[in-house]
Length: 116
Image: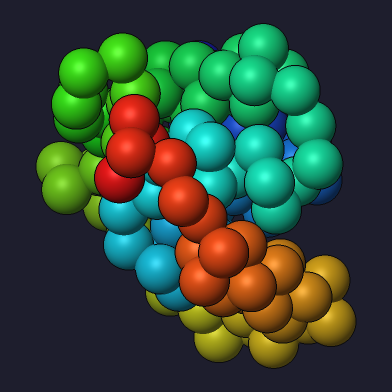
């Protein structure tokens, strides 16, 4: 029961939900990408990502000083079913479309050799 509550609670925060939707749409993202789209400091983004990691939503890959995040490949069946529901019902929300557009614009202008 505790795992189920934590899994669902992770999606109850709008920032974490936006992160999940971005990762679902784009695959792997660097913290700098998420900072630019969400317009939040690194510490806040990292705190939300750590919560998602503890809740089994994301996996981390380290490259130098940067961490890259993807949706968990070994997520539980509940997470997988919730992701399908999100894909069906939330991916087309105006906020999600705006986040994807902001990400595309940022990635076109990104010129940071430290964060590939």
